[in-house]
Structures are given as structure tokens and as C-alpha cells.
Image 1: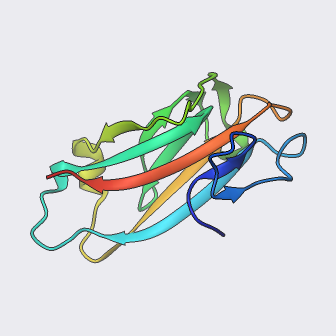
Image 2: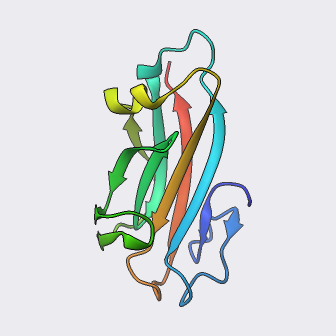
Length: 132
């Protein structure tokens, strides 16, 4: 539990995972959110600074897969190296993601993956945005 950005060794993490290196390579986070009344769901997107890969879900439905070839959770395979470089990438919600939204409270869940357990760093810093 903590504030976003999660990670270690980049000196840009608000929640430092000091015990991650050499022990585990995946992190699971979630956050409840509500779409503001009258907001256009096609204007919602996810900005993420990440190292190395992630899978994002809205209400249990996969909506983004970046740098993970197959599987999820402990069965995830085929990670691709990616450096966060203190930059965010924006992923607009597509029709599938918009279809996962419901009235009231929604849950954004993200599993972040490091390419290897002894990686020199890790970053998972998401922000759900409503673009005007």
C-alpha cells in the first residue's frame, strides 16, 4: 500500500520496494475510481511510466498489455525490456476498455513485471487521466 510510483533504484519512486530485487519480479496494484458524470469515456486514458512491462485491467477485463507476450500473474511469459527514463506513455482507452467501465465505482488493477528477478531497477507509475 502506498502512493504511485512504485519501484526501486531510479530515485523517482514514491513507494520504494527495497525488498524487491533478487526476491520477486512482479507487483500488483489496484485503485478504485469513478468516471465523472457527463465525462466522455473516449477521453480517458492511462499514462504509465514503466520498467519493464505491465498488464492493466478495468473491472477484471484486460485492457492493456505492454511488454508481456503471454499469460498473466505467475504464468506471465515473454517479458521485453523497457526503461522508464522518468517519462510517461499515454494509452487511450479503446472500445474494449470503454466497454469494461461501469456506472459508479470501477477498479483499475495493474500487474507490473520486471524482466528478471535481479534487475537493476523497477518502475510502475500509473495515472488515470481524463483528457479535455
